[in-house]
Length: 206
Image (cartoon, rainbow, N blue to C red):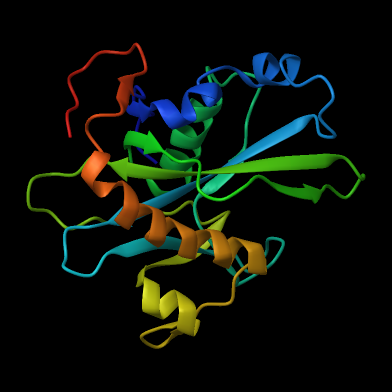
């Protein structure tokens, strides 16, 4: 893994409520049935006529071995905001840098830890930095994931991308991935007009 980048990204007004720390978010939701927050980063590659989404296959020695999911994970106390947590997880799991975050995609998903604590996961649509003309390529953490694919909407629906079977960690994860394609179609015309900066430097542009 290369040096951790500075997370400079834009975000839509629609996700502004997540531009706060986990503790600040929980303070504004005192009656929430959860105290743990996670994120998922839904990364679409729109450089080809048919958009594709990034999916990671969980490592054989991890929970849900061999099953598929988008990049994501728990929001840490040290994360500046929930959106920064999504950007961090994307970097740690796929070595891709977020440039723009929108959404949320679908509703929050709730699932328990082994000790019974409830986790709430929010999913975001994420655009990433690219080298001009270069194909998007992920670099995985082998402790967490063993393979990746860029899958089209049709491949996700069919549960197969080429010779690869796409069995998702949960059915709701597959539904959220499909929603990302739908939302991308709906949001593309409004992409630039609804963005805000994180307060970091603006050297990365879309």
